[in-house]
Length: 183
Image (tube, rainbow, N blue to C red; front, side, top):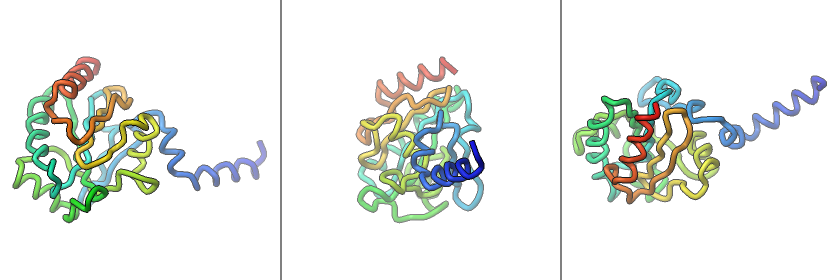
């Protein structure tokens, strides 16, 4: 391949960030900005199941933050990682910014799991992780706040669980348990 063809190909790839995200092999290719500074890299949790939940403090499902805390307390010692991804995509229900989101979740629901910066989770401007997940399981994309994605202990997308799925539901708890055993 000549240099010109290579440069043209790289330029085309750079122009299509959604396609590159969709083609990532596993979830470990992604990370999220933390409030203030720093990055939460999913690769830091390699070998562990990761539950990624898009949240909103003013959502009717916000009470799930307390149930997510129960799930976190029960399974974090065994290896589960839980990441809250605040989003304002559905009904404008996340008016807060940065560290204020995690602080509100702590005060109202006792949430101690990781929160990242407010993030777009749907559509062409979605975070690369969410574009990858949508490409992996198109029928299981977020349709409202508190959609849950379970990443397996090998970085694969195990499944998506809609907003109405209680964090302690038998199907989600069973899937987490299977991944904890697989890790």
